[in-house]
Image (cartoon, rainbow, N blue to C red):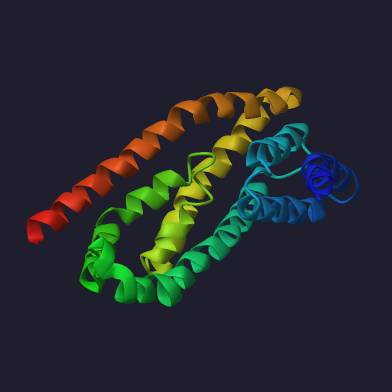
Length: 217
């Protein structure tokens, strides 16, 4: 199973390349589908998919704007399953668990309502910036669903954050040309720095939230 999964990941660039060579118009769909899968299966790297598309823009095989739209649509649609997973966990498990067991851990349904208010205040920032951080960008959709972030707001801020990410990767691929593959190495280096910073920010807001709960009680 793992070998099949590894083959899927490594074959995506070849599939995109062959599609561009045989049918450039269909290639937009393939790239959009690859970005959709990248959101569902995080190990599939968008850091290879969109820069490869940018490389073909550089060669004149693809259109920059259509490529951006294709990648963006695939990315946003791919974020939705994680959002609805979070929503499902909230509606069917989280509230029931707190109602039945919350008193043993000091959490009530009132606290859950307060957490929704907190996410409504800071959630936009987390969803937007989270879409720009590799390794975080996919799973940030889950807490948005858990906290019942309105779907319209989720789509808007996910789209804006994803648009910046897709444009950045595509432009980098265009500029690096045949060396587009090294972009993944640069992004991995930034990931090492950005991930801890984002986690620290999450902890900061969570601690602030706990202090507010304590003060209110």
